[in-house]
Image 1 (tube, protein in one colour):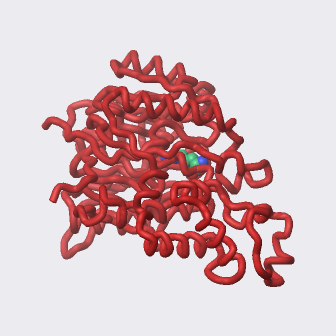
Image 2: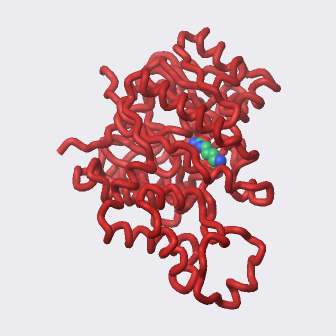
Length: 410
Ligand SMILES: NC(=O)NCCC[C@H](N)C(=O)O
C-alpha cells in the first residue's frame, strides 16, 4: 500500500505540507513566561497571521497542497470515543489526570465544537474560564497567581519539530522542554485516526514515549538512504541511536550522520544552522565550523549482529560529498560569513531555508544579505514577510512539515 507520507529528500518538489496558522496561543504569552515558553518576544497576532497566510500562499502558488494541523486533528477526533480518549490524555499531560480541575476542564472543552476545542487547547485555558466544584489545598494554595490551567502552545506554528517525515514513515517526537511536549500528542492522533493516514501503512520509526529527546528541526532527509541529524540542545545521542536502529531495521536508510552543534537557544536545532537547498548546495552558519570547515560528525551504518558501526569524521564537505555521491559541495555561509551580519541574520533564521524544489527556496525577507548570496549561487529565492513570525525564533523550514515530496531524479 502506498504510504500517504513520502519524503526522500530535503529538496524534492514539495507536494503536501502541514502548517499551523498562529492563533490565540500567541496572545496568551506575557513577559514572565516568555523564556519558559521558548520565545524571545510576543508577535503581534494579526500581522503574524497575515504573514503566515502569505507564507502558505507562496507554497500553494508553487504547487504544494497546504494542510493545517488544526484541521487534521479536528478530523481525527470525529469519533466521540476517540475525542474522549484524546481529551483524557491531553488534560492528563497538562497536569490533571483526575480530580475537580480535570473534570472542570473536560466539561469546558466539551462545550465547544471539535474545531474550536482543538484551537482552545492550543490557545490555553485560563483559570477564570472554568468553574471547579471544589479545589484541593494544592490547587487553592500553590501557584495561586499563575493564570492558566492549561498552558498556551505558542510554538505550535513550528510544525517542523513535533514530528518528522522520513521516507514513508514518521518520527513522533518526545520533545525536550515541557513547553512543547504536549504538541506531539496531536501528531499521534492524526497518524492513528485521521483517514488520510490511519491504516495506510505509515511506519512510525520512533514514537513519543521513549525518554530520549528528539525534535524535527534536527532531522534532515538528505536522500532516500541518508539522514543527517543534529546532536543538539533538542536531540540526544540516545534518541538518535534508537532512531538509527529502527531505520536500519525497517527502512532503506543505511546512513545516519549525527552532527554535533552548539547547545544553545539561537542554534537549538540543526536546521537553524544548516539546510540543504539543492543537490549539492547547503546553507551553513559559519559558527558551527571550526578552521578548515570542520565539525564533529559521527557516521552511523548498520554493523554486524544488529549493532551500529560508528566512525568519527570532521570535514563537512567530504562527509557530504561521500554521502551524496557528489564531486563537489557548495556550502553557502549565512550572512556571507561576516562576523556581525552572519549571527544577526542567523538569529532571525537566515540559515533556515525551506527548499520547495531543487535550487528553489522560501526564506525570510529580512535576511537580505543571505538571500542575495543565495541568488549569486544560482538559487531561486522566494522571500516572505517576517516581522512578527520571526519573533517565535524559527524560519520557513521550522514552520513547515513536508508530508509528500517528489522523488529526485537519479
Ligand atoms: N526547527 C526549528 O528550529 N524550530 C524553531 C522552534 C522555535 C521555538 N521557539 C522553540 O524554541 O522550540
